[in-house]
Image 1 (spheres, rainbow, N blue to C red):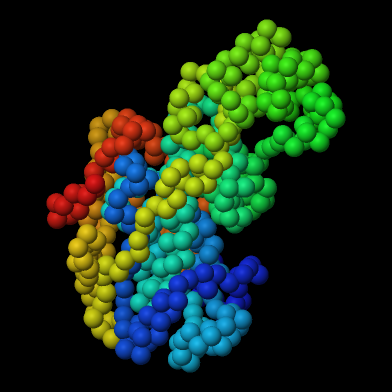
Image 2: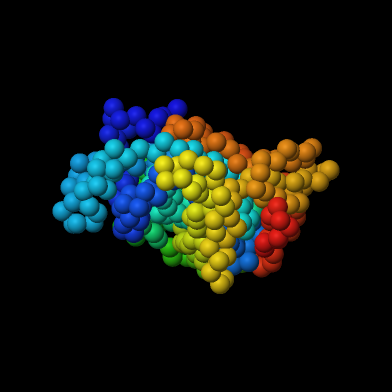
Length: 450
């Protein structure tokens, strides 16, 4: 476990500071609280979504591992402090506090890969106001992005059935968002990514062969195919829609024989072309050659291709933009605080009452109830730690204990967890049509949120 309060190294593992990946007002709130004395009050903040985007049936928790990495690097180094001083962002009292800032509190959260619903407290942060409030922006920027990507990717995986998906959206988003997107899509069930940094940094399997430019730079299609087969082997995937698809397929099989790994189709009426290509491949004896489809696919077009003779899909723009929902609409809210100026006394619930955005005060505990068949039926949110009954599953797990990171796990564990949790949801959870969340969220006082 990594101790976040260890001051022997200003930045663990030689990483870059993440402390300025934040909003200006986080630090001005800190400055005001240091002057009022409220900075040292014990607090509870929670991350949750008031609703799911676009009437979806469930959300997917992703980015937890990235958040823990960012938290480990959340320290104000000399350059950060010089910038804040020179830009006159905060006063000297606040700069002295930030110089030794280390998170020493506790964080619980839904395990990465789990599903969430409206009101689910997917992250619970306990610490002094000063420690916890300045984590709002970094937590939300990571979780809002990664949960949105994973939630969209999960729908695509469900629509694809047993056919594998490759994430190939790096050219459609920010260069660093592309890496995070590949990771989140993998958690949700994508098989591979085109992004090499995601492979290097997170171990996401990568794949890729060629684009139309490769064909066009050669004197003709035959020359391009011959070169690719010689350099990558007959198991490679040849792109066959640069010019004339049937002619390209015939050339590909002529050159590679029946051992050709796959052909990729990136344009045209994909269901029709897929049937034509499958028939032609079979006719030419390449019965084991796979067909991969790409070209502005999303969960709806993938579902429409269910009956097509296809063996896999590549998805770009739709997955890295959350398929129309690029944020998970998560918020980071103070739900409990102590009254004592030095952090003493019991925690009491607090919540805002603004129209349209009411809160539910108090530190929450979450349980998911399952019926006798193991199907999830209820997200139960309570203001006390409940005793699980048969079929119940506690949802909050320790991520940070007393400033020590406790919740790191291999990415494959999160991926397998998502597969397992999704199988527990009722059948309507997998429907692509708009509708209510797959299970209701009920708070201790009987209020239901959906």
